[in-house]
Length: 253
Image 1 (tube, one colour):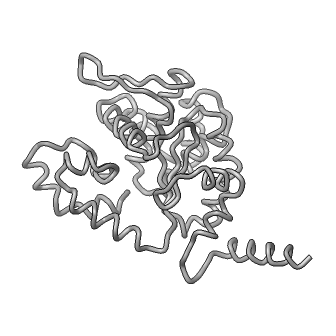
Image 2: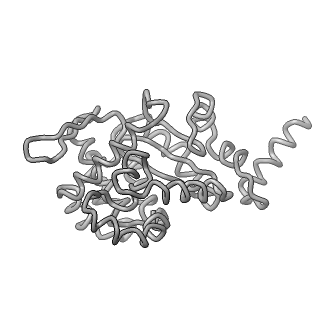
Image 3: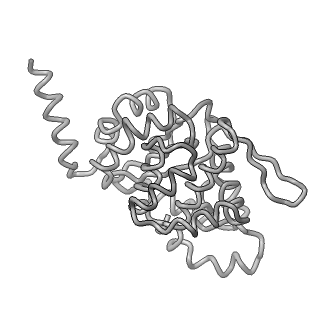
């Protein structure tokens, strides 16, 4: 996210003069529609080309905060994989899932979530954490803690995880009930609704921008292997090499 903000620093002034873009910078390239609205289409194309040329595997998880299968994916796959080989991943989290949104008379977005109002609260907390903590090295452990632990409602989970990780929770909670948080979650909705093909369930993953049923099955079965096999860099993390040696030895048996 930080890279996106830096990349577009040169166009913020022009965009603000037009006064046509009220989208936070980290979402400017999340869809063609938003890029056009913010008048950064050409810059986004260059950014995506640059991003695609890097060795890191682009992996995006679309999820919702109280989804049992999403929690299971965090617990059995994503947290372990990120901790072991996070340096070869460009990981993006999109907390929205199967929610729906509708604009009310005040101009704010009203969200309806699959697992009830508490899930909407959880989505907003996690979205605000992404925005405020900025670096994935800071916000992933927080969100992972919420999704890995069974503390009850998301607010309680957030409080306990924030204490555990030494994170100041107040700005995140303030954001989650503010116009900013409402706008941020709207753009998570836009990003989710822009998926092609459209998502049918959660967790829903894309690998280097692509979703197939085969990719989904491999991610849910062994995400570490999937990322290691996809990585094209010259030097793989030790966890990948260990896995390669294991599979090689198994084939020799």
